[in-house]
Length: 258
Image (cartoon, rainbow, N blue to C red; front, side, top):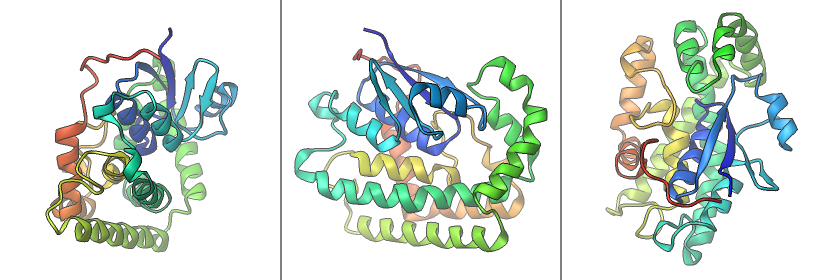
C-alpha cells in the first residue's frame, strides 16, 4: 500500500509532534511541506481545516496532531505504543494540557523574539519545502510577519504572558519528575512525553528536531540567555534527553506500511 502523506509547515512544533509520533510507531509516510499561508489550499483540498498537520492515509484524513498520534498508535508494535491502555486517561490529560497551553505559549514567545530577525525566519522557512516556494520567501516574509503578529496577538504583554505560562508548565513538569521517575506517566515513553518535548522545542531548540531551527548562538542576546535558562531547567533538560533517547533521525529504517 502507499505511504501516508503528512502535510506540514515543516518548522511547526505541532507538525513535529505528528512527525515524531509516526516515526516512533514505525509508520511509513512522506512529508509534504509548505510555507505558512501557502499551506491552506493543499490542506483544504485534502479535507483539512486550514491548520497543519494533516495526515492523508488511504481514504482517511486526520487533521490534528493528537488524532494522528492516536491513529499511529493503533498500528504500532506493542513495545512502541504511545497510549498504553492502563495509562491512557493520565496520558490524555497531560497531552491536552500541553496541546492547549504549552504549544500556544512557546509559539507566541518564540515569534516575539524572531519576527524582527528576518534572516533567521527565512532560513528556517526554506527547509523541506518545494524550490519554487523557497524562491518567493523574500516576498513572503512581510505578509507572513503581519499575519502572525495579528493572528497571535504578538505584543510585549502577550509575550510576557506566554513566558509566564511556559515557566508555570515547566515547573509543573519538574515537580512531577522530582521523585526520580524517567517518564511523565508510567515506566515507558508515551504520548505525554513526546507531546511535552515537541511542544517545548521552540524554546529549547533541541538537536534532532525534524526541521531546521535557528541555532541558539544566533538568537538575540536576551532570547539566547532565556533559551539557555530553559534548557538548564529540570523540565527543559528532561525534554532534551527525550530528544536524545527517543527522537529517531529521518534516515533511520521504517518498518510498517499503511
